Amino acid sequence: MEGQNLIILYRWAAGRKDRLVDLAKELLQLKVDLFASNSTEAILAIRDLNNTTPIVMTSVSDPIGNKLVASFARPGGNTTGVTLSSTDLATKRLGLLKDVVPNLSRVAVLVERDHPPTATMIKETQDAAGPMQIELQILEVRADQIRDAFKSMERARPDALIVQQTTTFNAYTKEIADLALDARLPSVHENREYVRAGGLIAYGPDFFALGQRAAYYVDRILKGTNPADLPVEQPTKFVLALNLKCAKTLGVTVPPALLATADEVIE
Image 1: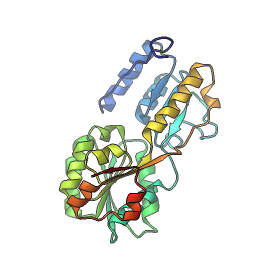
Image 2 (image 1 turned 30 degrees about the horizontal axis):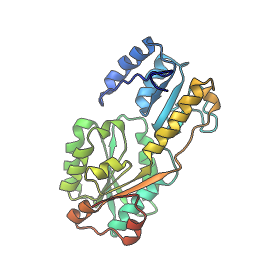
Image 3 (image 1 turned 45 degrees about the vertical axis):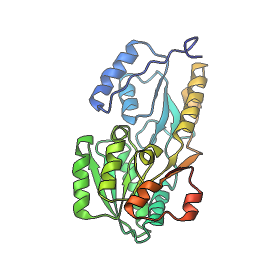
Image 4 (image 1 turned 90 degrees about the horizontal axis):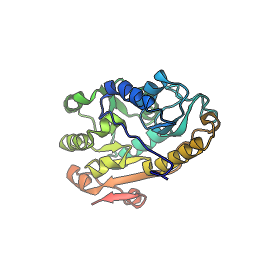
């Protein structure tokens, strides 16, 4: 119970990766019993300073590829928790775009530069696009280059846009949604917050459900379980969100069958 036998100390880097090491040092000096984070970079910063304090991943994209865990079944070390990783998500998102843009042939992919999970996200999207005969325009950018990326899209004239889910991009949710709308690009995202901000489609894990499962890991570890003995969990609940107001502005039609499966619809 928070305030009785649990104290939660929050630190936020506000999208500035250069602050992560100092924040990690600060928390280590406070002798916390456990770390919890949804940021790959934050977890790597902590592990570089301390490899014994337990760490719970609350929603990390590629924990194996970024060497946070050895495997999902046997994470090893001091890190475990929940991951965003799931098979066929890239195929599903391209399929959703094709549902609303039937002649889809070229898709821009906006991803974060120097972000550890980006390489895996690009490869998964490329692997999904090949069989669908979709050409990709990969745009790796830092936060201050987002507007420039949309200028590049204007020149390349893609049919639609995929936006990577990152903690840095989250601070620019409304800006990215507005820029996509101004460019008349149907967009698909991983987080429903983009759809609430004006994006067209979101499909991905239920972040609230992931948070609930992360709390389970925190509870088990604080009660004495070794993190290495707790397998990493992949998402089991997914959310589809649609913005019909955005669809109308873009002049695209959302098929009734797709609309019927949506968990959230903005009208």
